[in-house]
Length: 126
Image (cartoon, rainbow, N blue to C red; front, side, top):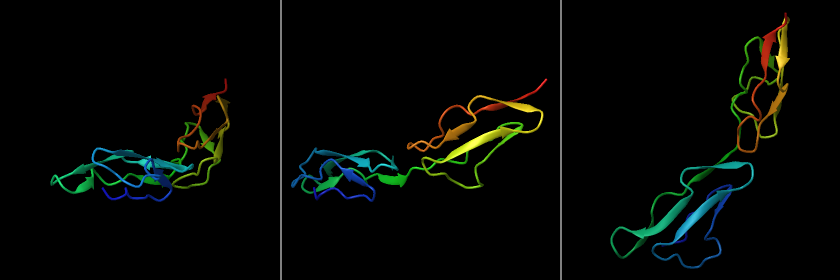
């Protein structure tokens, strides 16, 4: 096979090889702050018995981002209206008057693109 395709913000396990023989598998990984989209490995195969081709297109590396933070009943968070939040972003929750916060007041966007910790909740004050 020809060398496997390079991908932006990532690399493959065959980067130090000169030849890519039939049956060889290469695996892709992404740079920090990026997540793999698709199957991580491709294999050198053939469709005509003579010429080597890769089994499928390589995966892509996309920037890790969190979706908008979850909303809570009778409360709000400090996050700005945005479609996505970069890793390291944090939001704080607070409750409307007459309710008390139970749980952690803040959550943060992890490098994996998910929000940390369970979200807090607001309970009525008796």
